[in-house]
Length: 364
Image (cartoon, rainbow, N blue to C red; front, side):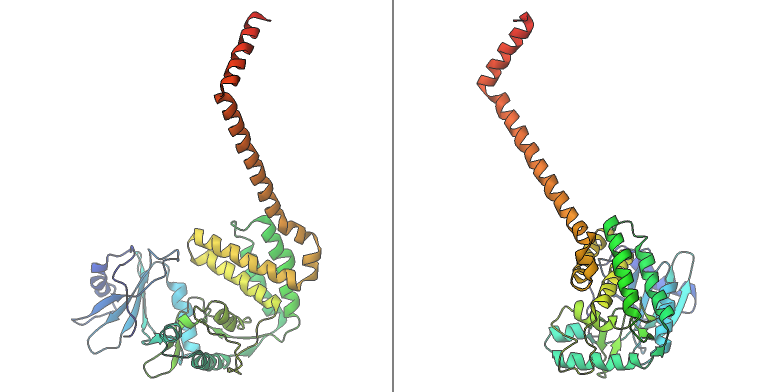
């Protein structure tokens, strides 16, 4: 195996030393002597970092497998299974799923190799070679394309905006922009397309594209896998969230899709806001949400005339004016407190205060 795993482990619903013994008790995972587990790296930004654990399970004479233990893994299993059935050349095979009252166990194939992200970072792969692998995977995904209709496409987008409307951490103004500006722009943009759907793993980035030992590109991470009308998000995510300088729109990659139009990019940022809200820790999700909202509003300013010329532009600056006014008042209050303190500490003020007290006492 090419990937290394940390020695430190997060808190777990199941003690590490009891994992192997528990596998024998749930049935179906019969392990020969010599079986071992190595912790698979998790994402400390995630809400479930301390309650879901993943291991690489090795047994003598068998290929490594990936084992995830945690609560409520059925949705992960369903998406993984559907994606694997549709794209067996790209995906890891699900092997076993067991659910118990305490926790679920999900066993699947482990894809060995290094990610594109690692290979480019180590200098073992050029940006042009990375793009070639990316394009090859996109062609396999494109083979699942099916025609659709505008009602289905609009319905998928509407579900995203309906879910966004339930997020309490988004302020009222941002909710209004998403509802009254961004959503109508997305619906109008869809009207100009010929809707199609195809499969995506839901997070197409260099971190989730592995080159296996035979040199073939494989995808990992199907937590958000779906058949979607918005599969152009694949290359948008590749460009936007790559930690290495890989441009999916490079001229050396003629098969790469062009950059998304503004209305579609606004929708992708809206989806990213929703994804962060559901998957990462609340404080971090709030930071991500603020960044996503900034991206959406900047795109709206440049592409939606009614946004920049209406009350929305004025409202967009309202929080800044409010904060500036509050800061000014706080500064004035501090200066006034300092002035009063200096007066009270001065000898002349104490003397005049004493004289005023005498006058009040004798009414003179």
